[in-house]
Image 1 (cartoon, rainbow, N blue to C red):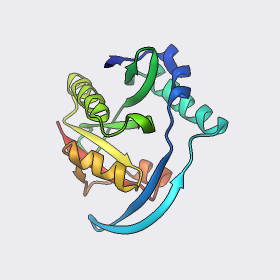
Image 2: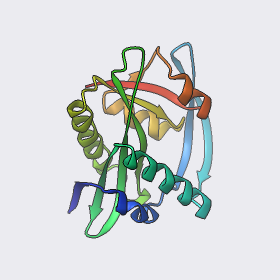
Image 3: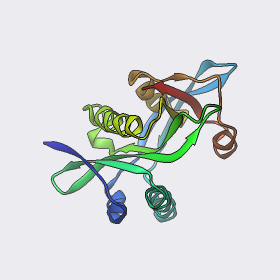
Image 4: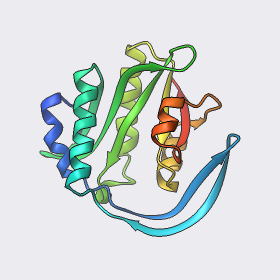
Length: 175
């Protein structure tokens, strides 16, 4: 049975349990708030050591600065996690960002990501947010996942996040 629990700063090493590899059949681009599908057909490999180090560092910085993380565990193994950043965004400063969200390849399409999103949404509401801001990778699986959770393309793109990841699809979810 998969359990969802709040993660702590010292849980960062568990991120090494995650297998983020996937077959990418479809990617999206977004122009003027309209998604365009592009056939892909390539394999995205699991993280290398530099990738793990960067993701763990992002996790630790967010949690050290008041962010919140939830993990999905199969026994003692981390099989998914999501991080809610602590910096409010948007013109009205009413949006909190989903900074990291991953589910291990063999555990996808079992509702784990949705359960993590539900917990992150509750945490965002408790912090006073009205929306989640999502800078999603452009893969069909990621964009379609966030859409299935109630997210939609945003007209108010966060410039800081866009500069970091210009190919990402920027979305919001009303809480």
